[in-house]
Length: 526
Image (cartoon, rainbow, N blue to C red):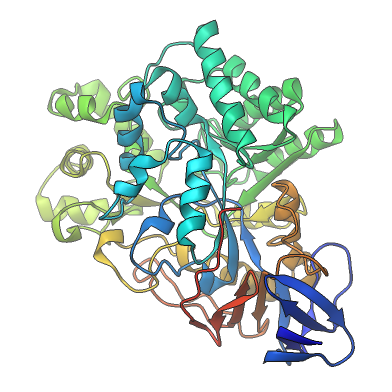
């Protein structure tokens, strides 16, 4: 038999418990058709001598929700070995949507995503079914999986209202959730730090989790506070998990308040204790000591209720006390010298790549006035990188077998593009960086390391027939040189390709050949 593609002479790390073996792989169409010690014949043959042949990496925490709708080649993930992305995280997404709150959801999307220049196609997406059909019609570079953003279903029910939902509103929200789950969503996500997610109380969270558990799907949590109240916020999630018996994944686990650095053991103890009680709790994290999100997270809930336009209208009348509360959050996130503007959303991307301190000095403004200036001029869209995570806590979370690796990033162009500013290097190098850390610190065997970026992630999100190299599975495969993998993307210049990721195969087609993107767009919305 002649296969469409053969991979030979590599060390195959299968994903899961099976030991690595030097075997050959035959691919026909989009599936793995044969795994054999015997030589296989193929129309095309990849010689993987001296390389690791791994399942394609699965990124559990992505914000590539709109990536398929751009005209640019969004290659930052595929070039680091990622074949499947899980989107709809942090409670944020683009569906479902009803006519009543169409304007509010459109604003929600605009506040959280860079938009494609031509986005008329997005106006026709009202549900998970519409989203899947649209992406599968056009194709994309990587496979796309989606969670239901609870911010979206709350907006779908009551807009940006801060109110506690009444019985009818709760019923409508849960019905919208069920429909999205039935149409193929892999679970739900919460963004309890973002409006309107921060308006959700434990009762509302628990009811959403019960519906999710009914479908045996997972809930990912951006917890309410990752700084001063990180422990209390994790306890909140665990309490709701115990009541609902839903499978739960804590997103981008970290400690952002310098005063709490060193508390990772206490947090891990809470998670381990919950697992011993029978709760199915996991987490993901990225291998960086800096976070990235909008400047709006610097605003306390009582000052900003989610209506960006309304906040900007009153921005010049904030009281001294309100400004002090904002600056208290700024300090807890590292202070203005440790906040780097990644995308200012200003003409010519002015100030992108500069710290708030540098912008303050250039503009001759006070600390708080610089923050408010950037928010006002960008219409609330300005994004920043916050250097606020302790390195030892990061490594401590990484060393356990409970967590997996995720980027909290998006597929963006691999070459500098003004539209995307100077984004966090996690968009370009999360997985190579983790591989390099493992090689240097000997945290895991190669099999264990591969599992943390493939099969374990597939198991958490119930992604079937991917995440492992098995006969009959989809042919999503990454081939890398373990000794040469090197992340090169930095905060000053993230647009530098990692080294050592040699080949990436998506649904049987070679998307990366000797480190170069081939132009293949065989990814699907799965």
